[in-house]
Length: 132
Image 1 (cartoon, rainbow, N blue to C red):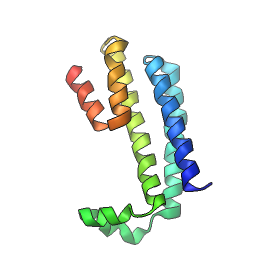
Image 2: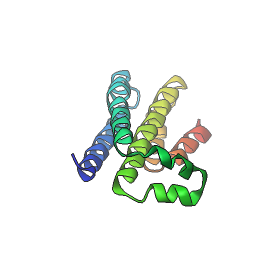
Image 3: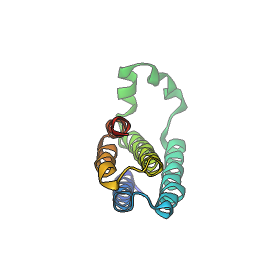
């Protein structure tokens, strides 16, 4: 499967996952499916792409911004970064869901945080932390 198809498939799965979390924010079953299924699949996909495309000699590129930019100069590297974002943003959303349920927050308060976490990761998590 080529990078474009993987991107579309992963993005679609992420959208469906966030939609389920939005609709059923306190469903333990949904969280289990998303964590055990989706996040695990994203992690496996990331690992496979990492092994296939990442050049171990490029580790030194992480030490400078210019080096980091050069790492993301091809489609496969950007896809690798995208899968990374999708997995960790969904993990943040799952944390928000579980923590909000534990703290007895009403779902309509956290749903906007899900949107911001899906779209902007750390900003959504920060907003949730402030609201909590």
